[in-house]
Length: 292
Length: 228
Image (cartoon, rainbow over all chains, first blue to last red):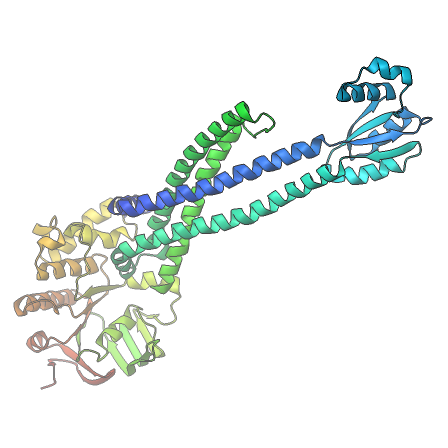
C-alpha cells in the first residue's frame, strides 16, 4: 500500500499546536521579534559605525613634503608604483599657498608678494587604511623627501574604533543569538509540556524521534519567521525614520542606506528568525527525547 | 515470541524491581502476570517494549535482543508491540476514529491505508458505531476498547496490557478480558499485568505470579490468581 511521507500529518500537528496554545505562540513570536529587533538594531549600529569609520580612514592621506631641488615627477611615479598606494596628487607650492590662504581667509595676492615658505607636496592615499603608517615611513626614506606626515592620532583612533566595533559586534551579537535561542528553546519546552501526552503516545506506537521532532521544528521555525517579519517591519520603518532625521538634522553623518540593503537586511532577519527558531526547537526536543 | 532469561532490573535510584526472571511466552499465547502493587508486573511489561533495559540477563521479543537494540531502532520494536494502559491515554481533542488513526499517522501512513485499517480495528473492538465520538462522550469500557483498537491497528504480533481493567467495573472488566482473549485466538500474543482476581479466576488461562520481583508460580493452563 502507498505510504505518504507524513508531511500532511506533521503540518496538521504543527497547526493544531499553534492554534491550541495561541498565547504561548504569541509570546514566543513577541519574544523572538524583540530579540531579533535588538540584534538587528545592534547590527545596524555596528555596520554604520564601521562604515563611517572606514569612510574617515579612507579619506585620510599622507602629505609628502619635497625638498626644493627634488624631482617631483620621479617621486610621484615611485610612490604611485607602490601597490599599497591608491592615488597620488601633486600640489605645487603655489597651490598649497592658495589652499592655505583660503583656509586662513587671507588674500593670496598679498602672500604672493612676500613669497611662499611652503614646499611642494605629494598627497598620497592608500588602498588599505591600515597601511598608512608603513607607506609614510617608505616615503620618508625616499631621496628628495623632507617629511611625510598624516593625521596620525585621528586615523589611528579610527582604525582602533573600527576594529573594536567589529570585535565587540561579534561578541555581543553571539550573546544575543544565544539569548534568542534560549527564549525559543524555552517556548518550545512549554509546547512540549503541553503536548507531552501526544509525544508519549507517539513514542509508544513506534514513531521515530524525527517524526516526533518534526512538528516541533516546524513550530519553532514558524515562530521564528513571524518574529523575524515583525522585527524586520519594526526595524526597517525605524531605520527609514532615522535616516530622514539624520538627513535633515545631522548632515555630517552618512548612513548605509539603499533599497537593496534594506531588502537584504529584512530577509536576513527573517532567515535568522527561522534558523534560531528551528535551532531552539531542536535543542529542547533533543533534550526532552533523551530524557523521555 | 517473548523470552526472558536470568533477567534482573535495578532502577537508577537503586531500587531492585526484578531478580532472576525466566519467562517464555509463545506465539498466540494468552498470559496473565499477577501480583500485588510493586511486585514487578509493570517492570516485566516495560522490559518487553523497551521502556526499561535489563541490568542482568537477556530479553528477546520476536527474535530481537531488546537490550542490545540501538536507541534509534526502539520505534521499530514498538511497532511490533501494542500497549494498553489502565488510564487509556487517549487524546481528548481527537475522536475515536482519529485516536486510532493517530497510531498510523505517526508512521506516515497514507489516507487510503488509514481508511482501510481504522474501521477494521474499530469493528474488532465493537465500536464502529461510535467512531465520531470524543473520549469524554464514551464510557470507561468504551475508552479502553478504543485504546485496544489503537494498539492493534498496526497488527502487532504482541499486545501488552498493564492493568487494563483497573478503572472498570466487574462486568466491563470481563468484557474487556474476553475481547483480549479473542484477539489472542487470532494469533496475537497477549500479556496482561493485573491484580484483578475476578477476571483471572474466571478465564482460566496461564497465570504467572510475581512477588517482590521474583516469579513464584507459573500455572501454564487453567491457572488462578492465588494458585488455589
